[in-house]
Image 1 (cartoon, rainbow, N blue to C red):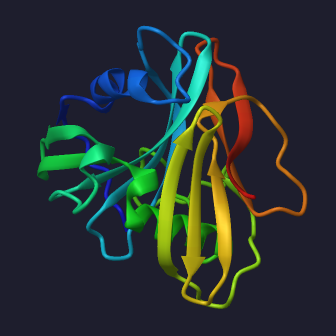
Image 2: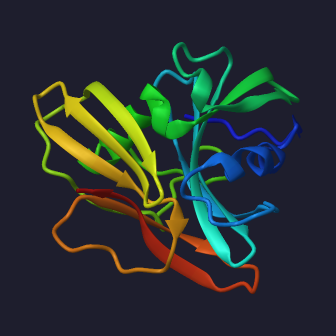
Length: 208
């Protein structure tokens, strides 16, 4: 169970994103001024890594930013580091682009397999029924054997091989636009709110 602490983070997530967003190939703005707009969390079974699928609005756009929070650096992922921040309870945290983090990728696969449950973004130990999934066809109990991540203007693709020998690609949407959930395809869809208060839904992740 992930515990959501009511405390400070310095710098804040939004401050880290303000510096990180302009370098991403899918970012279409000029001077980022991100605002939190929605998202959800997944639990790390080991209770070590925070996993958040965050949505921020920036101008007229909405961006999906999976993040992980670690108590020590992730080996081999320096280029995926957004920065470090001081957590009021947990101390120094290393904040990563979660599409490069094996813990997030493993739990995303579990979510698509129906063995992980999405959690409320800001409340401890509370499932989030607004997050909808279309199960992927996977071998029983399959975990992640290996994966690679590629970013482009159209978003992020995670190519992975499971411990059951399945090969699949997960397209992680980055610039979000309202869209229906795809039929007959493994996916994760969730909601966010624009500054005018309107709620929108789109696939955050699709098996392609």
